[in-house]
Length: 433
Ligand code: UGA
Image 1 (cartoon, helix red, strand yellow):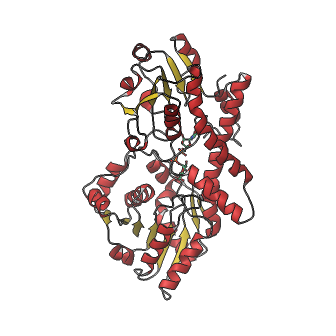
Image 2: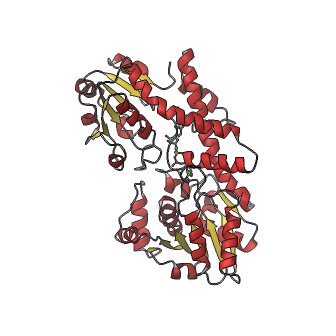
Image 3: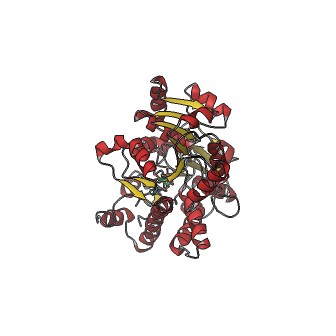
């Protein structure tokens, strides 16, 4: 199959490379000429484990190419994917669809023969209908179908999620489009991946409902963690105790500083807006959004608590800035709330993150260090915000010697309270009263 992928952001690049690896012919298109030039030279603009090798192999074997010009790729394509960004519109939280609409206009003028237009971008319910209207108006005689095919890729595990998904969701009633989508995902039949065919609006909603549910699950365990602290229980044991019930499941029950990233905060907010407009408000999700925002801001208070409430003139070492490990993504990372709050309380912050280079622009006044031990040196307290593997087995004796006072606030529960105390740390974590 010939695929044109519009947008070489996170989703477009991973999906394009994976489709090429399945054996399809893929052209990834982006308006950003600099980005395309870099991709052509084998430079990957994001940090995603395994993606550089995957791109390199498929380019070398002639199945994957990059272009700023959509014309040829769209004309020849069996399927054109829209994988452009849908950021939160400033001020009101609605998804900004201007890139999606522009892509639809562009595709409309270029298609030749029956073409399946597939929306991979996360778009509110009804966007498929809008795309169909745009294309039909611009090109009244075109032969096409618009399909929704949401992505469920986790940053840091995106290739695995694409190649071994729990399910693929395809929203269309068009039989020819179904055949094309079946062919595109045929390599997954081997692992018996369920392909869930639904109506287009249903498919659009599945994406939001999945992310909202996961955000709710995390928020639930975060609140249970607070309760654990208040009543002297252990949230990790509670999570295990409930998670072994297959109806609940053990995933996404790690208590922490609140969810961040490019998806949960944006998608929960957009879903809330959709539901309000439809006069079917989602009060659970509205509350989830609110609790999570408050939680992220409150985390700095935990650091203040271990230092008797006063951070004036104190040095805080921060380990981990990205919204989760194995990504360089800083979008809506809890660190963006926590670090400025520490500074506002009078602390000096020194930090280390293996990949969060963008933090340098986003967190003024922070001293960025070359490694974890440099970041803890001279610190009155250390706070672990992101659970990078390299923080899980730090040389604790060395760390203690380097620190001014042995205070550790572990917002990801990567260490054991009894062990940390035995080593002479004053240790605080999440939900382990
Ligand atoms: C999320 C979904 O997991 C993907 O299925 C979805 O495709 C993607 O959004 C998207 O819509 O594009 P992602 O944002 O990459 O993926 O990251 P997650 O692994 O889901 O983590 C999101 C946030 O929740 C992180 O801040 C993480 O630290 C936090 N989290 C996650 C917890 O605090 N506890 C958990 O148990 C799990």
